[in-house]
Length: 270
Picture 1 (cartoon, one colour):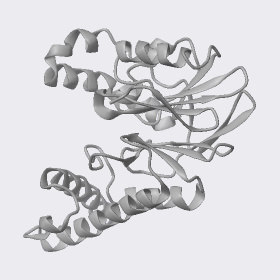
Picture 2 (cartoon, rainbow, N blue to C red):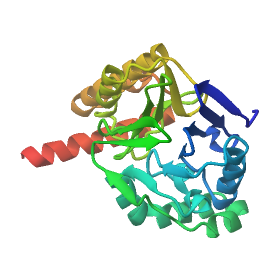
Picture 3 (cartoon, rainbow, N blue to C red):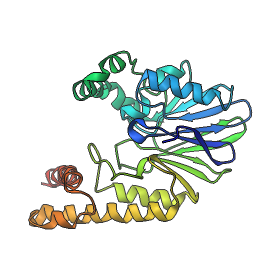
């Protein structure tokens, strides 16, 4: 994989990384820039700083698309700077950031030193539904459309370039990740994003840049997952697992999360 910036719109760049196949974004205005997501460690963040500086010397604003380590563990490398995110993104980083670090050390002990040196820095500028930032004379819009891949996914719209950064609401090259997702809401959230955001170039949180047709197809897959999970909750799994559009381990994780949502709903009305 060639870890070089790809210009996908006027002064709007994407850098796709070997580590976790994660995408970072760079939006350059006059005398200012926005960096979307900072990768998964101080070392990866420092690499991204160097890459940004090859494009622009301008001061930056940072945006975290959501509260998973591979999108924010590099925040400290960009300080001091404003860091924007959803209000729950900041809350969950405060609450679960150390748990994410511990899990990484346990699962990838060969990178222990890299994880241990991370200073966890949550967003210090938060919003609940929408925010707009002036990035060197360019308006960039941050939106939260609802629950999905996480509780706090946001998208970053660059209307003057026709580019939308969708974060992990959209995945390319691998199935969507359901570990702490909300499968019943995810297709609704993605549909709302498509309805309100007309951009033709859509950057997923991981993988290659895609178009609206790709996202529509993934939204339909997510809607099928939600429908099948609802039926399985009533009728039992039996052979319905074979109808899910993803490999069985991914489907079972989606079912587990959907059942959690449905059980909570049942408890709230009983």
